[in-house]
Image (cartoon, rainbow, N blue to C red; front, top):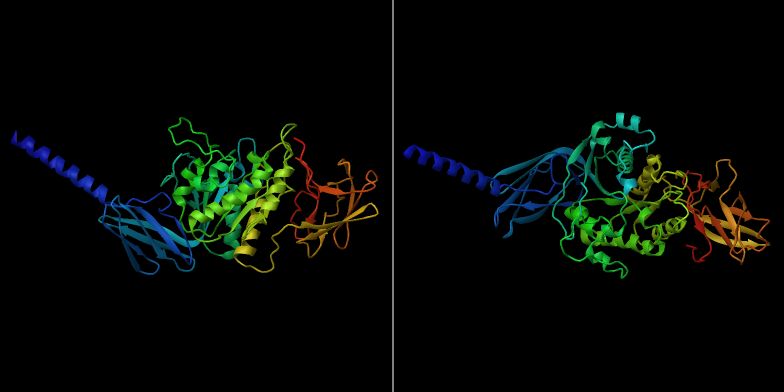
Length: 474
């Protein structure tokens, strides 16, 4: 009996010790782990949970400096560490009682990559939908200075503190499963800047923009109906706020340089609302991050045949074009030339990604000699039935690469559009049509699916556009 009692006491002591150590150990959100990338030359926030009211100590190997803070009554703690110029790998030691070590940490440039399926689409492609050139790209992808983080899909009616995911090395088996748009973007930055790049892919195919905006942000739009805060089985990812709560909120405050975005197809029938929601999302994220007007670049949706129902998606592309100049420090990558009639996921992901990277390299990193903006129509003049168009962002002129321009239409006061002949001239484009004696409006590539054929001499395509403001026919 005595031996049994002693054995039970020993077991209890071991259990108590184990619980005590587990409770005292610092716990970190998923984004803080081995292989992570911290934003360079900033005060980078680190946070987590520890024993309540305990003192949490953080030691960073790049400067051999210690930081400390006191955990709150619920164990929450947060502090900032000064990061140097890009480099690594380094280690971070964090402890209150039991030490936790983060290994193989890089200091570099961190970008959030978000949106719907064209951001989510991995290098391996979707079933029966390839990524052009991905086999070679994946085979050559091993790179110790790029790190990849994919956020697992999740929804929530309330803001969450954590999600599922981890930082992975940039090796073929991981690149194969990672966002193609994000990877090609990060690869070009890495090559051009020669610094480590951290890419956080948080995306979900088929989703609208409203779920990616916080409750605070959604309240700015009276047509967005906020969900009731009550338990729901199988919460739809289309519900406003639920993707922000589950897939963005856990990293709000993490040190980043900026964001890239590829979404819009699921909002194509509400272009006027989308124009406001696009800038609203950016301002919302900037507000909650609290690091100023960080750069934000997005891809304009590609032409695609949506079928006979719904609104011509050119109106959504128009909304995106207008949004691209509505607020500071944003930009749009146009992909009018790579759309596919019967596939909403263009196989040439590299082209759009590189155009996003050109925006970042020029506008964020200040690299000279880089053209990053597609030409945009500036002015329309009509003389004796002939329309002359001039363009901004075309200092070296325009080109069709020797092909006949086939995407222009003209209309008179009766609002009936007819195909038009168009020619590149010294100062822009000249357009006319025998069917329209007195033109009042011109449209370029303003259809669901069409292959754009007008470019800057740097190879950047012109977005679909129109000079009229006539209401669309639904």
